Image (cartoon, rainbow, N blue to C red):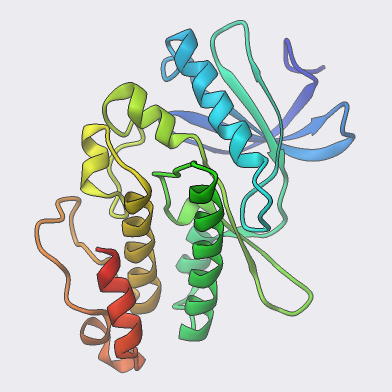
Length: 239
């Protein structure tokens, strides 16, 4: 049976966290496999907050970019939760890929360019991500053996503004200001720099959540990787 108040049948649970949980699902109208993400009721405790979150996620799905997941539908449920339906992408998350092996530098640079393209499209549309981390990047295999990087998890910016802090909690990729409920496009650039640093070096840019000092350049952190000074300059500028 469809989830009450929706046109969506839920299947296997994919992942869950402090603010939401995602399931494999089937959308009755679209007749296609999708991903259903349910935002917990306590996160959207005010009606205007739930509406604003839903609007922001839906707007991100209208961005014409191969690096941003399509949003097919959304709804506010009677119990206060928000449901967002997105395309189901076949592949693995960047988090899963990082656990398997240290990536070749050419692949790191290619993924970085794709993520930059996705973020630029979002920023040009006035949408900020504020939760860029490996679990929110999907790697979709392509016939050319070149993965397509797709950004997931839009809507966090609305939650940060509403709650006065990041309800997901600080991560080692989060810009410090998001802890206090603020952040703009520069926070996404900061997160991208932290992500590229770890992809290139195999270790986080910052050992702790407190980002008090700049890390050493990637080429010095992992000299055996042959990282160029140009890559150093780009990543360090993000911080």
